[in-house]
Length: 113
Image 1 (cartoon, rainbow, N blue to C red):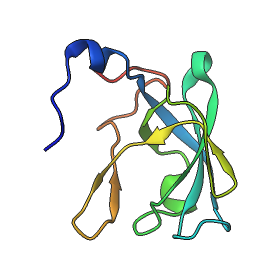
Image 2: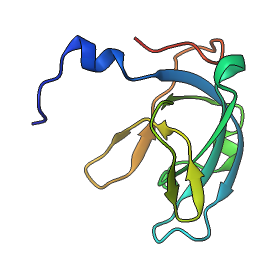
Image 3: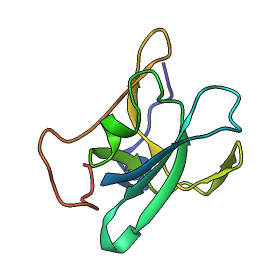
């Protein structure tokens, strides 16, 4: 179990909805990964990340789909990709990731509470 946090801790996390614009394979990654580009609306713009989400997802399944991401981490180099956000998903026991998304289309950049 993880350490308990406060509402003040949670309020520091910027979790937003965005639409996937582009997907490509991250050829430099040790584990199969995709480079995902997401439009988080006019205030945040388009952000890029590398994610180990290849079990269930590819370009056909993701482009145009809305996802949820943490957008205020510092950038991090992941196998040659400057990762600007963390896409959120449920991690199954075998390590496969099921992405989180709104149940209906909403405006890009909306904050998750």
